[in-house]
Image (cartoon, rainbow, N blue to C red; front, side):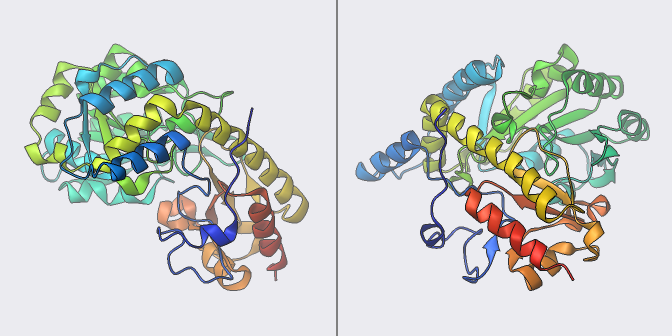
Length: 383
C-alpha cells in the first residue's frame, strides 16, 4: 500500500487554519483534529475546477452528495444507505443541535459518555437541554466500554437522548456491534433517541472496522440518527458540509420538521469536496490509513523507549492518541506544562471531562519525524 506522506513543516506553517494560525515557530502543534497530509487529488481537482468555472453560488440540494455518500458507505463500510434519507447542513455540531431541538423539550436531559469530544458538553445546552454524564466503563489498562447499565438508568430517570461518539473521540475505540445493539435496545425500551456522531468512522483501521449505528438492528434504525461528514477522513473540516442520515419514518419526521434554512447552511465548496471525496477518494484514504497505522505503532515504541511511565492504549480508529501523563507529575492539565516546558501543544485532557485529569490528546497525523521530535521534547521536559 502506498503511504500518504505529511507535508514538511515549513509548508505546514504557511497554512492559516486553526492548528497553524499564530503558532510560534518553536512550538509543535499536535492538539487540533486536522491532518498534516496534502489534500486528496480528486478533492483538490474538484475544488480547482469549481474556482475555474466561478462555481461559487448557492449550494444545491443534497441529491448529488447523498448518492456519493451512499456509494461510499456501501463500498467501504458495508452500510446500505437510502440517499433519499440523507440531508445536509454545515457541520456535525450544528446537526446535533438541530436534531436535539426537534427530539427534546427545553430542560430535557441528554446523556454523554466522558471522556468525550469537549463540544458534547456544550451542544445540549445550546439546544435547551441539560447534560447528564455517564462515564465510560473501564480504563486505559483494560480498555473501555459503554456503561450500558448507567445509560439505562439515565433514560429511566427521564433522559430523552444520548450523544454517541462512534468511533469514540478521544480514545479511538470502535464500539462492537453487540454493544451498539444493546444500546439500541435500551433506547427503544425508553423511547429515547441515539444521535451517533460517526465522523471518524472511515478512519477505522482494517483490523477493527467500525459498525455504523443504524446498521445494527431495527431498534437502532427506529431510535437512531447518524451524523457524519468527509471532514475528518479527508481533512476538509473548514469547507463546512455535514450529513444527517435517518433510517425510519419516525426519525424522518424529526428531520422534516427542521427549519428550512438548516439544510442550506452547508458550503458550496463543502458539497463539491465531499462529493469528490466519497466518489474518488478511496485510494488516498487507504494511503492515509497506512500512514496512521505506522504512526500509532511508532508512538507506542517511542513512548516505551523515552517515556515509559506514560500509559497509552493504541487507538482502533482515527489519528488521536489519549495519553495518561499522570506519572510525570505535571498536574491535572499536563498539556499546559508540555506547552511551557517542551514547546509541544497538546489537547487539554480535563476539557474532555473529569476523567481527563492527567491526560492529554495527541494528534499523530503528522510526519514520523515530527512525532519523534515531540516525544523527545516531552521526555527532555521531565523534571
